[in-house]
Length: 241
Image (cartoon, rainbow, N blue to C red; front, side, top):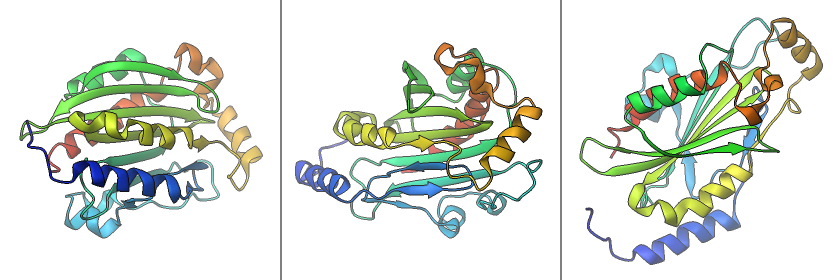
């Protein structure tokens, strides 16, 4: 068990109060995805991903969406706590991707379990979000247990995987803050430059698993895609102190 740190309660109040007072909306317009990350967390730059976190240089680029609907796009964004405020080791990881691969909910659970995540709960998400949230824990190589909330969303043939992570022992302290983050999420076609043309193209390609009904989790491909992404994310994050 980790020893208690001095002034922990005071730091918690500072972190949570600053997040409530100064949240700012963040937007990825190529995917029409927006949400409010905590104000005291920072988005990690491409240089830091490569130099400090061990990402491959080829995997840190977030190319803009071209005019052609036949070209698929993938984006990755990461937020960490500000230096000196890393009390809970909060981490927010966002993967935004096109295309539907294979599988379904059972594949999702199998991938998450194989990654080392022990699933403790599942929750269907309703409007304004349509998707599934899985919560669970995993042990880092140093034995410290981390807890994650993994959120899978689908919208018009585009897919989002948002992971919220912190120490398991402190997760109840940050749970309300993470819930605010989840409730701020908006994922729609409203920000696309040409939403109607994109929608027609995706329908012609047979893309759009949300038409099958997220409420029944009959999504056929999006969950497997999320599982594959989170597998890499969980394995990649275990070594971070």
